[in-house]
Length: 144
Image (cartoon, rainbow, N blue to C red; front, side, top):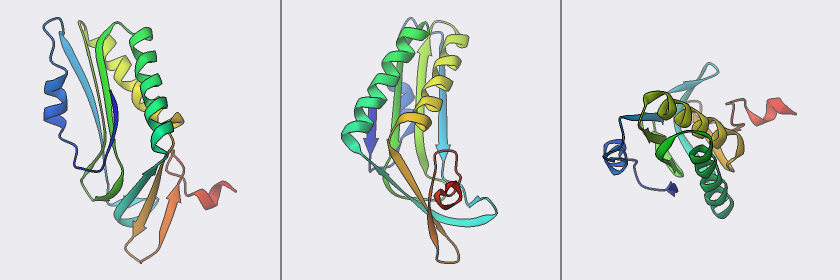
């Protein structure tokens, strides 16, 4: 399951949904909105996505993780819309019989989502300015 949502992410509920009798491990990753980036004070973020393409690519990434790693399940939820400092922006979870597979799948999913899923982040700064960021958190203006 790959999901874009405009409501707060509930990491505990998402982890519970991965419960499986054959799972000996659950690895999760949470990405939170932080209050600074590149020396600038951040006051909030806005995420936008090309929803249909994001859903399709996110589902492909999860399917790849299931093929590459000995996992039972993997899920990813990414927020869109306005987020406050401290809000979870993205959550990934993977379950497996053993921890190595769960960790590897979780890492693979978040890395691929950041690279391939069309989700854009607009940071809003304390000085009133804002800026769109590349997935590696580089301001888009610096990439030209």
